[in-house]
Image (cartoon, rainbow, N blue to C red):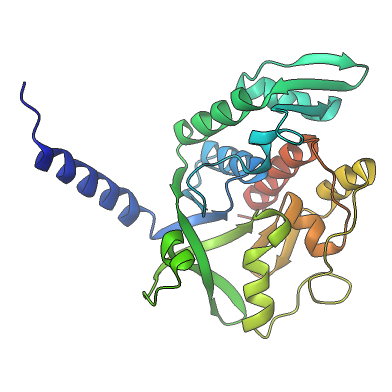
Length: 257
């Protein structure tokens, strides 16, 4: 067989275009491909929802890739072990209530299972705005991350979504756009973003799950975005709360539909 570069190029363009066209109107748009976003996308897609996930970086997995300070092992607690078990990620008990897993195995396995469950993942795409109709967020305005990084004036495209999940971590990127551009109160005590507090793993892990909820019409918040939105502390390199938050936000959306 003689390989033809044009056939290769056409295959990529046609298949990617097909994937993008099918994702212009979804049940749930997940913004951020860290552990909470991936887990949410997995559970939602597994339930039959049409899901698209947008990650601004080339790679997915968020902070999970690097464990703590690039020691690529992650720690989870008892409550979250069943989620890694579901994905088939191997864990080892370290001491009572603490388990470790290889960060690379965890990220790659969760990514693979999420795609196989039916979620469509787009990397190198950033969300620069939202669509709002009658007081509800109804979609996303997206562009290529390299366009954003280069500061080029290139107009974006839009994605319609019945629900949006902000899982962009510390940055709360979707919520910052809403706060800056929309006349819309967030479901925080102040009605605005509260900001992340300093590290307190035990409290942060509990609050990550408690703060996972709908934060304004059409938008849910999960993972570290939840704590940054509601003024909770950061938790550092323990990832159980992220996994549990992703499952919880999926369950909330499924129950509301």
